[in-house]
Length: 277
Ligand SMILES: NC(=O)c1ccc[n+]([C@@H]2O[C@H](COP(=O)([O-])OP(=O)(O)OC[C@H]3O[C@@H](n4cnc5c(N)ncnc54)[C@H](O)[C@@H]3O)[C@@H](O)[C@H]2O)c1
Image 1 (cartoon, rainbow, N blue to C red):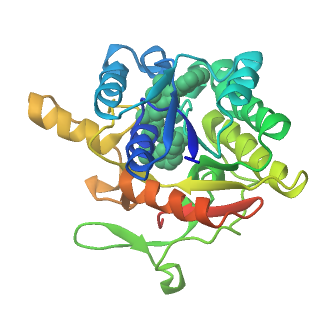
Image 2 (cartoon, rainbow, N blue to C red):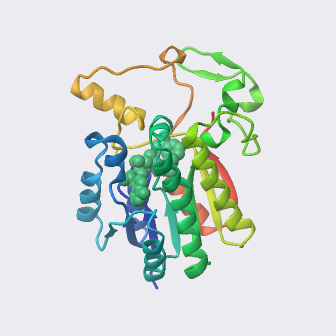
């Protein structure tokens, strides 16, 4: 029998890539999104174009217009769809925006994640649950590590950090932003549902993720936004580090591929950094 995947945030950069990736592998694909990005960031953040692209390019694609904060709606959807794999990529993704909308931020990133986890525990406890977390759970701790300035970028001075910080890097006693704090709550809940309830859950702590289908705005999705400014002849503001890159960028298709590997061999309460610094 064919496998079914439920992807939250399916209009977004990661969600839409995951939809296409798993459709190519024969999955029945269910996307969930309410275009909240347009509410968070205004018309420049409108993701409907990406939803239409998925609807016209993926045979049998089902879009569910639902808010992850709607607890009973999420419970009902997980029961009805009965997914074998859940990829949770819906979020309020910006530090700066979170400070202006603390309740929307926390209700989406923390409570929305809990709604999904509990629905899975009730109806689909065997389903692999992959959560898009972020390296912002480490707060500003990594910023205290010494850097060296190279020709085009900054790198960690410590050669043992050539591949970035480990997942054991401390997450507390540092500054997170409200966004970082709500993502920590979601990340810990995902781990807990793995360790306490034995669900096959996993957190991916992304760094800078990018790809062709990001609806880039100044507050989130810098590479997409940079290209957009360039094409439209708009001014692009550089913040800090003399304009040199500090973090590496990972393509959204590589993220989807990584998720597929996790799906094939899931573990409980696992955590992976996706990206170096
Ligand atoms: N893009 C990056 O560089 C990056 C880096 C690290 C972590 N992440 C994480 O990866 C995940 C996906 O990021 P992205 O870049 O694809 O973001 P995105 O904003 O492109 O996609 C998120 C989608 O979720 C939807 N959404 C938001 N709130 C919702 C709600 N309450 N109900 C239903 N849908 C809702 C939005 O409309 C949007 O389409 C997020 O959890 C983000 O924190 C992203």
